[in-house]
Length: 383
Figure 1 (tube, rainbow, N blue to C red):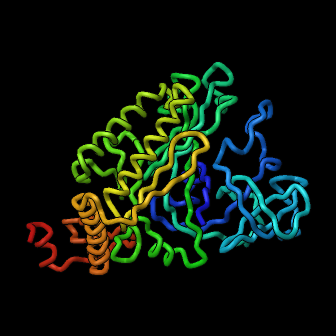
Figure 2 (figure 1 turned 120 degrees about the vertical axis):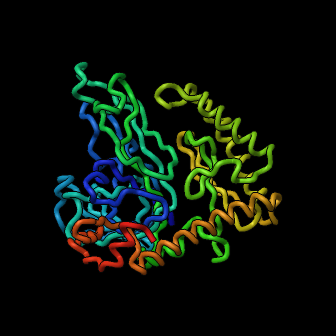
């Protein structure tokens, strides 16, 4: 099962959750928030939980915990037992037995969840940058708040930004009001009832088909001069696709940028319809060119869109393209194996003090060891 889990940027900055990346394992307490329990963003505005996270409907068995909620006075702390994982929920009434609930899931359990509540484990198979339109609320550039009437936007990404400025902070577009602010990320978590490390070894979406898994290609425009993504952006020249498909992908990407305003929002709501329709056709054509053994993932930027995956059961219509992507996967696996071998042999980053011949390792052991004369000469003169 794939769960959309919202993680705010501040929680990443605090170090509570590792810097998000595709393929990472995550074990964390997950909280389900339903509309009647989530606090409003602004007491003067009627904004629902939909401003932070993506809505999901799931079924499970509710079990009251018998504690008193600190986060939501008057609520009934409840565990929702689902297949292979558990969620914490501040229920509005005493609830027990089978339930079907709609809400958002987040990983922010600070001060909400009783100590010892079980963590859910899984692998991040995709993620989306979450942004929300903020406006200056006091006219002086000090107090910024979510702009009324605007929902959060989600854009597929392969890497989360190293630094995200807050609303009103330098670099966040403080010269204009309103402007888009990155609030966090939605991690699409493949929930597993096994150890996270073992799950990571079996659910990597880009594993080579030699292991019996599909090679998953993601299709979306993200200012990388390509709409193809594997471990990162894949240049068209490396993909070896047919000239016609490449040209249509370039045109699709250009039309998407042309349909956005200065806040990276659709100029016209109807513009999302042809974007989605064309993206769907391109994803199917890509799947047919690559053939069996591949899967194409497309999640439109249109509001309330759902993720779609495309496969072909037929042999590749473009063997050169299929071979090119297989070669990329093989090269990545070879690189990982070489890094692991180097680490097992003691090869890695270190700092060397030539006067004393001392090597400082990156693990915090100071000093790691003293070089013998031959080792010192090799470092100073080269092999």
